[in-house]
Length: 150
Image (cartoon, rainbow, N blue to C red; front, side, top):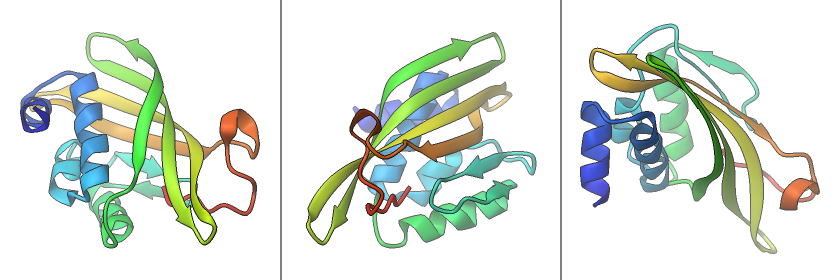
């Protein structure tokens, strides 16, 4: 079922299908599937709480994700999606539930992410992903000593 969802998302799909394919690819450490969700454009951007810097352009985003995934997939699941959809664009704000393994065991971190999609001739694609760590103690967020890998 996941392959059908991913294939539909990469051919045309809906913003929801592209979002599902994006998070499945993160979990599977599948860089090619992950990058197929993105618009092939130099104006796309990505911001992660661990890196802090804004990454511009599809090649730079590819390099960033390649580094993030070189040790395997990320245990990140989106939830609590708030959607604003229109004819040619969609904005989804999600709560990413990220499980990180620390010396004292697994901990869940919450990350607030905004994913922006545009309808292109190839179908819906991500044009922006901006993620921020939840404040310590907020809705189950980890204490300050935890490290967020996403």
